[in-house]
Length: 92
Image (tube, rainbow, N blue to C red):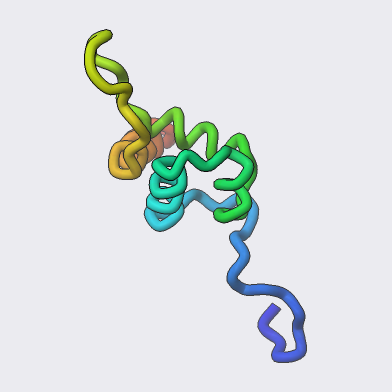
């Protein structure tokens, strides 16, 4: 609502909206701090399944059994998201 006497909070994230790059950056920062999924959801304001899907989407596949386990990358998550969006459109 755009009324001056309205008590709605404009800062809250609307349901049904896609994650922004800022949201993905927040997920990356909070994931590196080893925060739980529910705490990340509390900061972003979306459903737990959205954050879980984003963490799965943005985690690079492991190349071998040696070395570190790859972590979440907001850049990789955004690239995979854009590729999926292009592929999901109707063909003419």
